Length: 489
Image 1 (tube, rainbow, N blue to C red):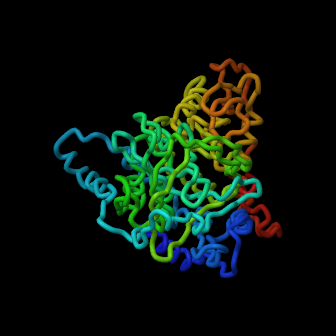
Image 2 (image 1 turned 120 degrees about the vertical axis):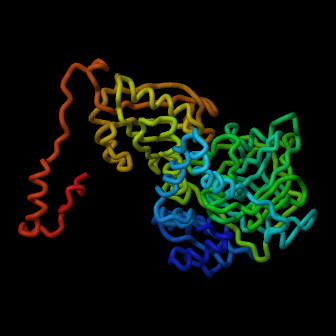
Image 3 (image 1 turned 30 degrees about the vertical axis):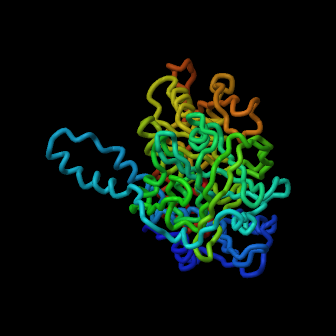
């Protein structure tokens, strides 16, 4: 199911009992965040604040703050359906004969239909503001945490182009400076930063879309391979192309159904201090220097809805997006590392701090090969701790991984340290964007790895006795207490 726009998704959430409207006036300074934080921690509904102090616009937050709503956003019953679709395309072999090529033609044509579609006009152009009519203070932009340096746009789809004309869409927070300027927070590892520094350009066109159909919003944060248009990725996930419209002031396209669009220029000669900001790490991001984004045109729908998110200590809305990324991109990771059985990035690891990996171990040193390969894969290079276990360990149950890992390691032998790129937001790394990582080989050790002792079996009851107890359980008078063996882990 492809949603037409954000409003279509809101209507669907309300029909499904996944939306709560807040009708009393709420302050966008801290109060709204505290409400959203409490609801997020309890994995509660999406929230639509209808009366926000200082603005005529309603605010939507926590829109995809559960796995059920993530699946709704992607139009599936189970997130694994998306992974299966991606896997089916990745598994296509190059057709050798004419007949095989003909057989694959429908799939190739379907993919061609997913490219973004340029349209002449869209609802995002209902209202057009220029010059002195622009006032970012009219938007209900939140200040979320007490030490935040100001108000931040936290769910913007930021569009830029490379010098060769390749479009990029990323999600980079924007701290409001005044009525017409924000900071432009892109990390050195992001394509947006790369696009802003090419060919000696000092003023780089950029456009910011706020509020769109949920699949397209999520596409902005997916770790797509370089030079892959995120709007094409959204089309793949939606099974329908994203309608795009030209900006008013420069040669960039934005989703035609967006609620609000900010058009302007990144001024690389105007660099200022940004932050601090209460981030998804659970800590405040420290102050740093970034260029300014000058807004010269604002377009919007009639009566626009401001879409935003709150980040902080997990679980929060971004955790569920992260879980979707984990599941959707697992087939791509397996394509490069076929020995991987499953991957889990626990919420407590805030994306880059911890990755749990189960593998089909086939040779000595296999776990170390995998951890080193992970540190060479795109944004996985930031992973601070990689724990590798055998294929029979369920990495989706972190407690099970902890049990096996602590039991299986000899710390001096099984921990591997290395240096490499670090996430900019990692406050503990010894240098900005550079620090150490550790891999933990928690697999069973083999004689070929220098382990000469016997490896003990895991304690398990035999299947016959389990079946007998299952059959006789009611006669014991214990009710349903621990009836299922799985309840013991």
